[in-house]
Length: 139
Image (cartoon, rainbow, N blue to C red):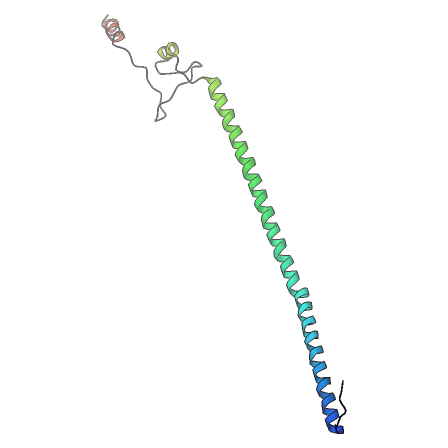
């Protein structure tokens, strides 16, 4: 409230101007705060939304990549199990009778069992068979 005691007209105008100025400054401060809030809402909020969308996209891609890895790993394991089962069924154990006939080590189906270098492993004769072969060769 404006006090009117002993105030001249100029003092009264000055006092009213000061109060008007204070009101204007407080109004401007409120307007500046509103402008900041509007700026945050129009500029920063969309940036935050975009960042959140990028994060969600990265998470989705990572999950897809993990699923693809798990599916590939399961497929490779199944293929390995199928091959191992086929190898078990095929045999792979040496067959003495067939090996003696062919002259190199073979399995029960007649397939050659290869050595470390990938070549056939020849059948070695025992000591009792060797003299017999020499006798046959001399005749």
